[in-house]
Image (cartoon, rainbow, N blue to C red):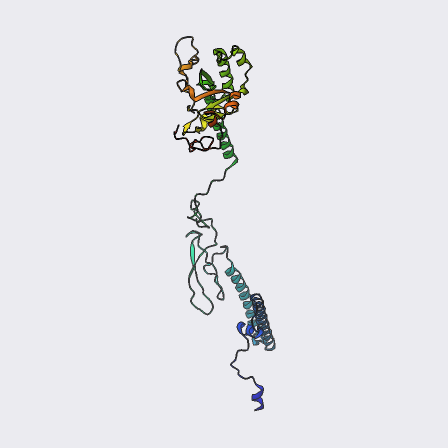
Length: 398
C-alpha cells in the first residue's frame, strides 16, 4: 500500500503540459492582450527549450549504451579480424555516401546525372536530361527507407539551362494588373528637348500671328460730343494701337475741321492747346480708359451693355495680298488699302464719341452723361440692367 501511495495519481496523464494548460496555470484573471502575448511567447520558448533538453538527454543515453555494450564484430580475434576491417571500411563508405546524398538532396544545382536525389525521406529535385531540355517541370518523388508512397509535385528544375531555347521568352514573374491604365512613358532628355523645341516653335508661331493681327488697320468713325453730335470723320488706326493714340488723331482731325468755330473764334488755337488727357473716348455708354489696346477688346470679344460687342472687328489675321506677274514688280502688292475699304468704315459714327473731359465734369449729372460709366474688365455687362442715378430701370432695352 505504501508503494502505491508513493506512485503518481495516474500514469496515463501526460507528463508534458500543453501550451494552453501552461497559459491557464500562469494566467490568473483578466490580463491585457500584450501581456497575454508575452506570456504565450515565454511558454513557447520554454517548451522548445525542454524539447531540446530531452533530445540531448536521449542522445547522451544512446551514446552511453553504445559505449558500454561492446560490438562483437569489432573484437579482434583470429577468426573475425579480417571481417572487422571490411565492415569498418564499408560503414565509413556508407556514411560518406549518405552525407553526399543528403547534401545533394537539400539543394541541387544540376551538376550530377543522378535520377533521384533523396535519402531518409528528404525530397530532392530531379534533374532533367539535356535531351529533354533543361528548365522543364518534373515530378518529385518521396522514396524513404520505409518505402512509403509520396505525392508527386510539380517544381521547376534548377539544372543547367544551356540546352534551353534562346528564342523562348522567360515567363513573367509579376502578373500584369489589368485594372491599371496605360502607364505614361518615362521622358528622356531627348524627348524633353523635343517637347521644348515644339513649344518654342508654337510660341513663335503665335507671336507672329499676334503681330500680324495687331498690325492690321481698321477704321473707326466718330463724332465730337458736347451735348450735340458734331461730325468728326473717320480715323485710321491699327488693332494694336492704344486708345490715347486714337484720341490724339481725333484731336488733329478736330483742329483741321475747325470744330467749335461757331462758339469760339480761335477754334484751331483751342484744339492746339487740348491734350490727350483732356479727351475721353465713350463707346456706347462705357468710358474706355486711355491705356487699353483695341486688340484687348477684339481678341477677348468683350461684350458691353445690350449684349453687344464693344469693338466688333475680326480677331484673325488679314489675308495675304495678291501677287502680280507683271515684269519689274516686287511680287507683292504693297498698296495700302483706302480708308473706305478698311474694316469698320461703315459703322455708326454716333457709337463712338470724343468728349472733352472738362465738359463731362460740368454735365455728368445730366442725361446722357449721367448713365456713362468707366469700363471694368471684371464686370459682366451682358446681364446688366440699365438704371438712372436714382436706381430706376430704363423701360427701353437699348
